Image (cartoon, rainbow, N blue to C red; front, side):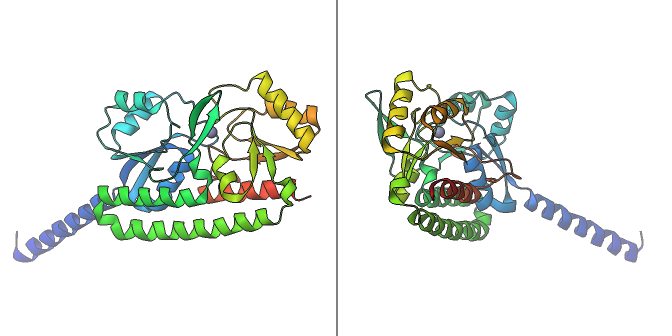
Length: 298
Ligand SMILES: [Zn+2]
């Protein structure tokens, strides 16, 4: 090999190494999230540096889920598992065990103040903390800190993405408060299938009543349904709302028997598919507040 050729070959080799190093750095970190709302939050904070696998997808019910062998494989390859906690994902322990997951479990709701409710004389914890945007900010901070701990090289990116997301949440919080302030106080009362909006109600001054409890695992009893029908008639509650994760038959029946109108579909425990009206955490709030306002304003 003459000298010139050698230099060209060496330069090409160095260039190749450089390209390889770049490809390596651009390889996203694999993480898992238990359900679609949390999955979106992790995507917003992680951006291009993170590849998020979500177990319970759009319109799926995160209270009850049957993990698949594909879920176990995805989890085994993940560096972090993000869960909501507060008793939402009863099926996760088994999935974690069967996958041999060796990464870090991060409970996104850590640091929120849990709501307790009494159901059938037992105190239960309400897991739907994400429905209060102030809690959403705590989720975002926990996600950001966990991503930085696992991938310190991405610190600046995660901090910038989280800040942008937090600003969006602050803006949405104002939007929701303004929309509710416009509703006549006596109409700030909503029927849904299960108790998914307790945090929303407490944060924004709305009352939510549901025949089913904080989990979709147990069905509403005939007594619970009769009680709600009486209440709707007595308090002249104007509308009942369907949820994207529950069967509509129970509420169809309640609407029929009371003359309350069906106010539309609220996204409670899952997002819509990406091309639907609630494809992200913030779009979910946007859709829900628009739906509530349209049905309750007059
Ligand atoms: Zn729920």
